[in-house]
Amino acid sequence: MLDKLPIAISVPHAGLKVPSEVREINLLSSDEIREDGDVGAQEIYFGLKNYVEKFYASDIARAFVDLNRVETDFSRDGVIKSHTCWDQKVYKDKLTMEVVKKLLSKYHRPYHEALSQCAETGVLLCVDCHTMAAKAPSVAPDAYSFRPNVCIGDGLGACPPKWVNALVDSF
Image 1 (tube, rainbow, N blue to C red):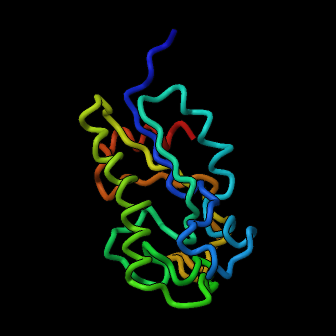
Image 2 (image 1 turned 180 degrees about the vertical axis):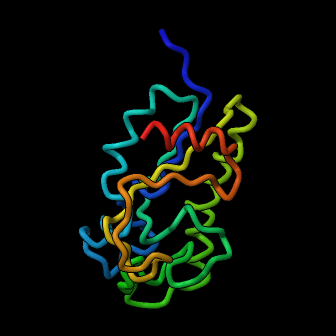
């Protein structure tokens, strides 16, 4: 049997679940929740689980807790959203600080703690996996523009250029 690759895969926006803490005040339909996340991420990335050392995916929808935001980003499209990336209001009422703290401690922090522990397990590379809309939403840096089929980033230099170039060449 083939050994697992020393890679961790993170799929932070694959979830569709509404946290119980905000279920009663949620304004979004299931389609709107799906459109704010990474549509198709489960189908694309979950097949890699058996081939890599670590695999992390959230079941909580990005529309409520965005695991790819720093804990202190409280912008409209921040860690605990008030609006989706399509600028749709998420809640009937403004969240209390108690609910915000609960969402951070129950969903955001555990995900990041698990990723932080990867270095201690022999993982050599962590890959953050996403999908994106063909046309950028209004809140994106590339608002309303058409996007490429594949987008490869290096975490602002966190990945060696030789690795990034090899991946680009493979596509």
